[in-house]
Image (cartoon, rainbow, N blue to C red; front, side):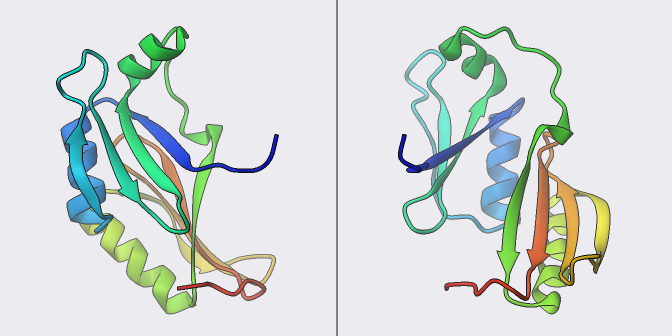
Length: 140
């Protein structure tokens, strides 16, 4: 398998609320919800960078499509890392996320490995890390 990940799909309970958080709160570009005409098909896509997309799809529809029983979610199953170019940018994104309705779980701080990061949860509990890593160059 070649590492060609092109879509990261987050299961959500309320698709409209999640759309509003990511589109209006965080400013992610999207055409909105598509596929409403199909049973279990409503989804919202967001263009991120380099061909990567974020998709929001109702948890119950993911369970239906994958034939996996829906179980209680745990926010510690994975995190999504959003890398930025400076400590100041970490702080700005954390403020933006909070204004959008995110729950700040870990205020931005200097890390043990020399970076700077903070964590927030979206309205469905997905955990995001906003991080500046002085070893990584960020492409705009």
